[in-house]
Length: 261
Image (cartoon, rainbow, N blue to C red; front, side, top):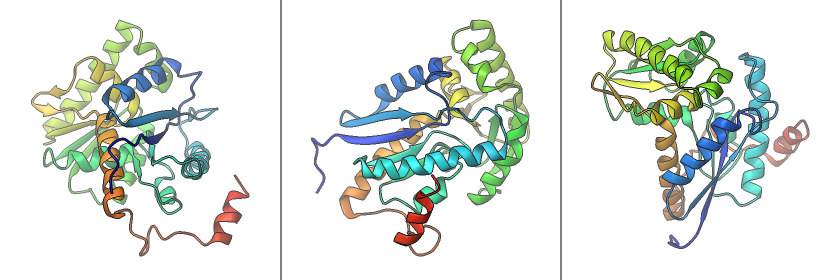
């Protein structure tokens, strides 16, 4: 039975550093507090050092930390675990390790975008992410729905400046619009800024629609979908399938894995 008065705690895992990226994280935490339900408490947790090298080995390192933190979140009584890293490194392994609801910014945004239009276009912050997103799209089975990935020429560090400098902010907005237009010309009718950084920056600047196509702030989507997932889990235990892909590990397998963290 659902308790209306219970405070539901959500662990929001980012791949950014609370000190290095404090400008973004402070804005993000304020936004999470604003949009969450009255009985929802969302706490951001970062990684130090952050994912700053834009390389697969960096994604692996951060994914292991995220997996460790997901186990910790469940042990500490959190009601859900979300990953705010769009590329969602480690998200499938996490779903196979814990019983609380788990969701990532990438999957939440992509799947909800499918309800808003027929063809989705992604705009990422750096060209290096293009093949990563293409692989992500394939894993989600959305090759026929996502018509392309375009890249801006920005970096996480540049967003720290853009959040407080109008000229730098305008550079991001202009680059996004230029890449978005390419996707629209290819037939996209839904636009996805592929990452929490551009999502929050563009939303702050009122860019919710571009040329009649919705520009998805996936942070909002992630929060509302994980809140729904918590309630669905409380109603009748609805959670991920344990049939195959997300089968729980044996106690010995989990113990051996924890030993390397």
